[in-house]
Image (cartoon, rainbow, N blue to C red):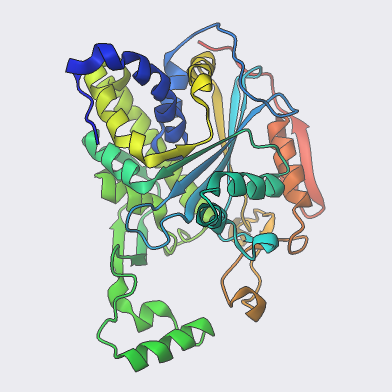
Amino acid sequence: MAVLTHKNFPRLSKMLKKNKVLIIIAGVILLGFAAFFLDKFVINKRIDLKKSQTGNINILLLGIGGGTHEGPDLSDTIIFASINPSRNRANLISIPRDLWISYISGKINQAYSLGQEKNKQGILLSRAVVGKVVGQTIDYVIVVDFSAFVKLVDYLGGVDVNVARTLDDYAYPIEGRQRDACGHTEDEIASLSAQIATSSAQELEAFPCRYKHIHFAKGTIHMNGEGALEFSRSRHGVNGEGSDFARSARQQEVIAAIKTKTLSLGIILNPIKVFGVFNILRDNINTNIQVSEFDDFINLAQKMQGAKISNYVIDFGDQGIGRLGLLSQPLPTADKGFQSILIPRVGDGNFSEIHDYVACIVGDHLCEISDDGIIKDPLPPPSKAK
């Protein structure tokens, strides 16, 4: 892999300009770079990017394990981002990885992986699958793996993250030990695996050496790349931290922390630091953005100075606080491999309510989920960019 330095800046400056968009958009998923660019620039150039019928620019953002992770192409993070330049708004809608999709006979996080197995069509299949779920045309897809996230946070010297509520996860998977025998014989492994498949045994109890306990105390904590990734990815936290809603909130805190650190270091104003970021990300991104569109993405980010970024999660709600969701969690069944899955509350494969909810959000309304469907009210007019 070639390394970029300040010494070869003149001949690479044009290439770097075109590839800045990859830094910008990839950051929307996991790194927070979009927020940085939205705050930093002003421009009045024409933008000729693809747009949906609503006039929004819709982007699918996927975070995958990559590398040696088990299931490297499974999407651990799935975000539908809809950008409205005319109203100076951007909406990020998180979709849970366990949502069941009948026409691929699997969870939504398998779409990119299945597509990659078939002639590297991961972008095409995931774009089609998520488009059917949200009921919107997806114009662009960006895929980033976790190694970029860890390396970048470490490159920044770590980040200070606000931990709103103490997180304890006793079932965080240890990388590289997903198939550890934990001292069992082959016959015992076969028996335990059969029990786990029928939910008569729990994998954590049967194979405890595959997992570890992670702990993040309430307050501001300085995290390195690995710590920030664990905080963002944890799915089995206690004390209300095991839901996709809580997980999304933690990811937003990490994004905010990275934005703050990036601003404090003046990354974009220092060519050497920009080269470092580019080297981290360039081998960890897959996208259908064409080279001819790169500059338009830069112009878009600059035009969206001061944009309001809103975050939403499609999930099964929170009964404890009376928050309704759009999904339900059925009991495991044989036809779905006894997997723990999520389906629309109005019926398996019926995404009509999700369509209404997403349409409400991208149409710039205040959207409330009720027992009878989606209630929408108009949003106040957008504030002017500073």
